[in-house]
Amino acid sequence: MNYQTSISFGLVNIPVILNSAIKDNNVTFNLLHKKCDTRLEFIRYCPQCKIKVKNSEIVKGYEYKDNNYVTFSTEEFTKLKDTNEKTIEIISFVNINEIDPVYYDKSYILTPNKSPKAFELLKEALRKSQKVAIAKTYIFNRQYYVAIRFGYQNIIMNTLYYEEEIKIQEEKIAKNYTDNELKMAIKLIDNLTDKFKPQKYKDEYQNRIKDAIKKKIKGKKIKPVKERKKKTIDDLYKALEASLKESL
Image (cartoon, rainbow, N blue to C red; front, top):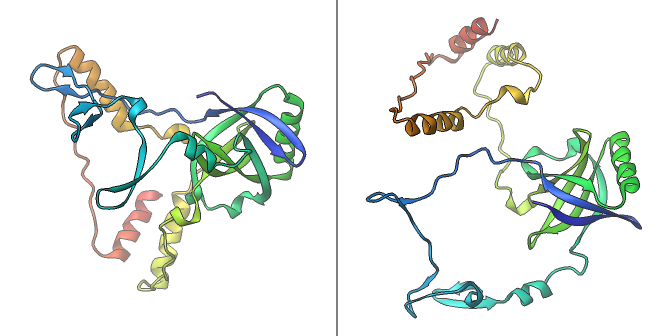
């Protein structure tokens, strides 16, 4: 991905290049015909006309009732966009702790394009102020609100979910535990507290898939993962007590 846009910051315009900060770690597989191992083809087929349909013959339709559609062309979608869709328009600054992590969606790295001075100035201002810019923009035909922040010596942009997309409802905490159990739970949390070290966390399942691919290429069989037996204690107090001993 190499998406050119610009940050609109007051009357300042900063050309930037937007690149994904995330690499998909999943192993991809093709769908084959089990009988002959031939890769399957996916065709766009109209059951009414009984023909294959070209991309140029496709329109998007919204079904407002059974088998009734209103259709939209690319030009009609373009008419509905803002005139300044090509910019990342900063509208305010907030403290980062005001944004609940549930709102974060995808992460991107912004790099300068033709105006390094203004870019570096914004980066340093974000670092020193410890503020996050809230902006709105379009990425691939969808409007987003985004959070722009300093991180990893870069400017990081995170797309945000809209309020109506968040399904979590606040619930009252029912106190059906004792004060002593709460103290033990907090102590267990303290004992297990460590610094966040992302390099420690490995995608074990994907690594096993990659290893299995190598083995199957060599004609070896795949062995099942050994089951990890974990004891459980039904009594909450005794379970907390045993957990505390194991955490020491």
